[in-house]
Length: 174
Length: 187
Image (cartoon, rainbow over all chains, first blue to last red; front, side, top):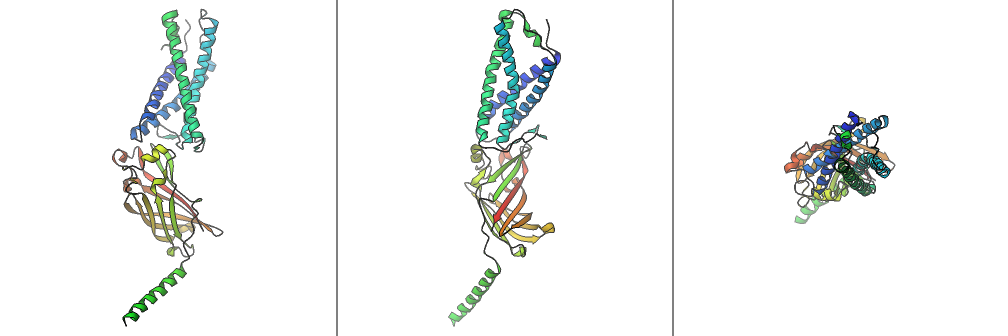
């Protein structure tokens, strides 16, 4: 069976891992009441992971545009093929949109991102108290959309593995 | 006899007082809407700006006679704004500003001397959270018609004033260095 290329597999799992950590960290940090050093640390880590995801997403998109993905198996009904196609497209869009929305949310709050605490990233927008709640909401909604897409993505993979038993999961395994 | 002994020095004192009053112009009128006092600090190397929304500055300054100038600023620390209501409430607490006990911070200039480049060297006493320390900083004065604009940046160390106690003493989290930037427009 045709497999995804090694870099595609690596980027898929690396991004997945980073997204899961940033997602968990994000939910944890906003639940810490008041102001604590841990909370500030988590916010910074969350942003660093998000920026890393964005950078890897750029690499991944470049790789994907220059390297064809293996075709869907012929036994898949047409509707499932297009559903899979649109879901993948949506996930690609989200791995860009989510870090970008978070980045601008942070800028709107007047807190620029200093990558790993050493590299100040561009301040593309002045602090904006009006936009801040909107960007916060957008960042949250995009994340909830991704959670739904992620669940569908995993369920589909499990269905292929354990119900269809077509073993296409192997194409993306390291 | 007792009356003249009382009146004479009083009259003299009054005369002296009115003379000094004449030598000094009345304190300038500060335009609060155009003036600002901001603080910039670094949190995990991220520069964060905050502002004191309420303060009163009393300035009596003539660039021709800088050493006779007087300046004092009283800051309402409860007006400290980090841009997030939840955090503003946090920094009022004991380990930060402890505004319940120390609602005001103040700066009183003790000397203003001309310095190179048309600037002035200002020394004075800065009191925050009940702790006073001597500070000095360069002051820029710009005259725009009848208006004078005073600008300066005052570098301080937050731990000098006990700002950030307990686990917040860690300067790796929030740097010790804080810049207080002021911009005062007065007439």
